[in-house]
Length: 615
Image (cartoon, rainbow, N blue to C red; front, top):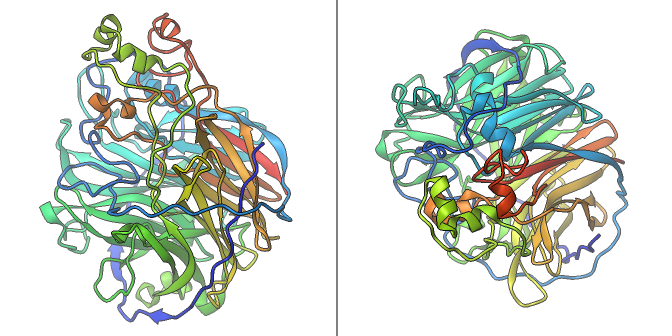
């Protein structure tokens, strides 16, 4: 157990900026149906097609803008902020009881699902949803469904198969299927339906080249049982005037609907993306899609959908990673004809990498989505908060076994991988997040959000902590605002979930020179803020993945884009990326080759931990 440290509450100003521009009406395309079915694990330990060419060489979730490369997960970060000091810890009134947990999906599941007709992928980008006695986890690029005791009912199911597409890579023919990324999921207690979303990029035929068209694929369960049948919908997001999309003028002719996130209110499902040029340079603003929830739940042929373009010059806010709120237990904001709240940050737009503003977005009159969709309205307001900053440094790791790194340094082993022998120092540092807003919750009449921020550690170096916000969405007032941090470790990819009683949890990864990447959490409430840091599952060894190998990953190590935390009655389920295994180079070279007894893949060893806490 570690102790968290709290920074003082900041002042805040509030002003309302109503936007008169109506949304754009779009067409949601109904696809087929699917049933999640476990696919066999298997395939060769490594091939010449380990990495998806469309996704290699790109940035992670922090760093500089990329320019004209056809990849996802781009960033607009230009500056880096100074670190914050740390104050004194207090005990929050939210005091969750740890009920236990289990290992979720891992790199081995990802790589060897569907008979091995998968690419090696990192990071996992966790999606988690729970309800009706089920727990569903999605990562890049597989999903699994468990009962509430952690027994796996279905999985791993590769996402290409789940969405009805050809294999990600057919290792017999070399044919490519569509490239799927950024999964998220949501269980709606109101309609008793499960919603699963991904971003899908089309290919030119069966080649690796991207066609330019890309879409959000939305799967909606037909019942409250996620192991049964689902309906599939397709929402084009290339926004170049084709397939019913508006033309946003993205360089190179196609926009990219990157980093999709899901939220909901009583009437609508909200999907948000970061819009970049797919084949050129440039960020074009976050996009907010509003879709009839009832129509999706009923399996309608063409549910109403409208789009607010965050890149529109009339919007007086920098729209980046605008995250929609997930409401707890079917309790929604009913003011103004139904309201959905969203949050975003803006430090990535400044050369200093710092900001004292977050942006409160609201989509109101959401009940109109079924009868008069263009009457749905968007507002945005700036909130003054404690200064936060884009983290400046990667996270150092505790020394340990790194067989992939060691294999690269050993000529005979590197030749087995099919790569040149190169010596890199290790263990490699891993990425923390930039200062984009993470998961947002609406509970107890309040809005709860988190983001990563730069902090100063005890040794004078920079690290990552988690800035949190508890906001009154009606007045713009702050109930709590501070920074959760440790003196000798990084906390990163925080995700907050809160019960309707106002007691919650922030989940995250803990990593540093004394901690292997571990699954952690802190209690969270509106009076004190965040409580002590607890590690629910310590990491077993260092991260040892291919994006930490400059020859393979373009020099940018990857560790997540987001974690997850969700409320289910009086329980909160959390999911964090961590490292569940360790092995030596000798074990790495023991049959089955490069798998360390089935605990990892040749090019990666990330894992996920799912835990339950009761409040």
